[in-house]
Structure formats: structure tokens, C-alpha cells
Length: 215
Image 1 (cartoon, one colour):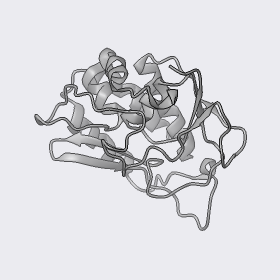
Image 2 (cartoon, rainbow, N blue to C red; image 1 turned 45 degrees about the vertical axis):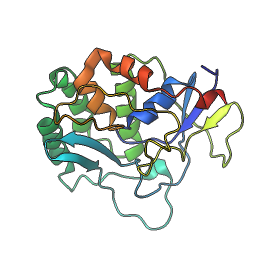
Image 3 (cartoon, rainbow, N blue to C red; image 1 turned 30 degrees about the vertical axis):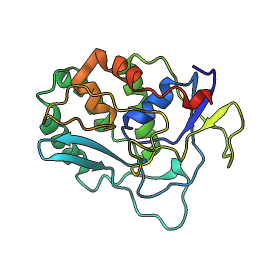
Image 4 (cartoon, rainbow, N blue to C red; image 1 turned 180 degrees about the horizontal axis):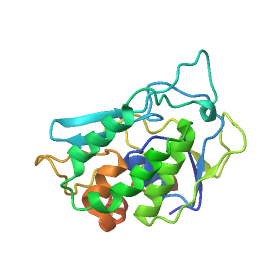
């Protein structure tokens, strides 16, 4: 492992590539001064259900023009929390570790953080703790268009357009999933946590493409 920092956006219940990027770094920096970008993982993630892969999205209050990421507000007038929780229960209630971890997630949703950035950061911190991954995210103090060495700039590396040929930090390593016989790669971290529990970190280590940060 190269002793370096990785710079990432604040994503909503990020996928496995996001966490392998964290695993491969010594320090985790979260971009706190960018402008919000629509149609990205900042307010969406993917999980596996009996009906296949489903997207979970956090609705946001309407804003005109560019808005700093830390000022983006969640729209709680829409019943998205109940819908998403029903989806997670439907997808993972029969998974081995759902009943152990679900209350921790539900507490965060029940607190109803006003801002998307705060929700994402709370969920990220929880996931790192459940993984027993000893990395404490640090929020950037200002925006820099080009991150300086030894920071690895991964702000635009992890998108929902990535596939097995374009992953920079991740290689698919199959693990048990509740539905179906075919493995669905690179879903939200909750898929791995609910299905593998304390073995989740081991799966991430098997999934890490460490040569990228060593180039």
C-alpha cells in the first residue's frame, strides 16, 4: 500500500469501489466545497432486491443555479424514507446480518439530517465503523481544482457509468447475496454488510485493486 491520501466526494451509501479506494489509502479526504452535481452517487445508490437491481434516491429541495454541496437540503415532504426502508427490508430482511445492523441505519434516517452532506457523512462514518475499517474521514478546508501530490484525486473516478473494464480501485469478488444465483457487483456497501457482516472487510480486501495507487 502506498502511503497516500485519497480525495472523494460525499456519496450516499457508497458502492464497494468507493470503500476499496478508502481501504487502499492511509487518509480519507471528503470534498466539502464542491458544487452539487446532479445524477451522481451524491444522492443515489443501488441495491439488489427480488426484482433485480433497484436505485435508491434521496429527493432534494429545488435550487436554481450552482449550489455548494454542504447547502443542499433534503426534501422530507416526500415519503422517501419509508419507501427506502421498505425496499431495504424487502431486500435484506432475510440476510444474515440485517437485524444486527439495521437499527444503526434507522437511527440516522430517523434523525432526519437537514442537509445531504451531513446525511452522507453520518452514513459513511457508520459504515466504516461496522466494517471495522479504522479510517476517519477529514473534510477538505477549501476547493482545489487539481489536488496536489500525495493526494490521489478520486472525485470523478467512481460513477454509475463505470464497469468492470473501467474500475480503478475495485475488482469483483463474489460473495453471498440473498437473491438469485448470479453475482451483482459493486452495489451499495449495505449489500455487503447485511450479507457478510464481520466478513465484509475481508471481501473488500479481496476486491481491492492496489496497483492503482502504487503507480
